[in-house]
Image (cartoon, rainbow, N blue to C red):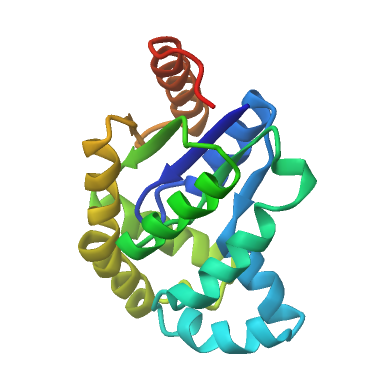
Amino acid sequence: MTRLLIIGPPGSGKGTQAEHLARHFNVPAVSTGDIFRSNVSRETELGRQAAGYLDGGSFVPDHLTNALVRDRLQDTDVRSGFLLDGYPRTPPQVAELDSMLAEQGRVLDAVIELLAPDAELEQRMHRRAQEQGRSDDTEEVFRRRLELYHTETHEVVSAYAGRGLLVSVDGTGDPGEITAQAIAAVEKFLASFPPRT
C-alpha cells in the first residue's frame, strides 16, 4: 500500500525514475504526460482540448487534469498503491488530490523531489529533442515549462515539505545511481514512520 509522488523540473528524468521506482515498489506509474500525449495522438476530446496547451508549453488547465487523474485513481490496479508522475503541479491540484485520496480513506506516503540545475536540464532537453523528436521539446517551450515549474510547482514542493513528506534526491549523474539513491532515500523515509492508511 505505497502511494508515492515524484516531482521535478522538465528534463530532470522524472519519467525514467518513475518507471524504475514504480517497479521496485511494485506499484503502477501514473504519468499525466503519457496520458495527455496518448489522448492527443488518438485525437480524443480531451486530447484536442489539451493539445493547444501542451504545444505552447503551458500546463493543461486544472479542471481537465483533475478529471483525468480522478478517473485513473479509481482503476483497480492502483488500489494497492501508485506512483504519480506529473501531478499535482499547482496548489489547487494539491487540494484536489487530497480530496480524491480522502474519499478513498487514503493518504500519500512520500513525495520524491528530483533536483538538477537549469543548465543541465537544458542540455538534456536538447539531447532528448534530437533523440526522440518530440514536438514539445523546442527551446522556447522548454523555457516556458521551466519558468512555470519554478513559479507554480515550487509552491507544490513547499506544501509537501511543510507536511514533512518531501524526500529530496540529487537528480544529476548516472541514471542508475540516481535510482539507487532514490530507492534508499524513500525506504529510509518510509521506515521512519508507522504504516499509514
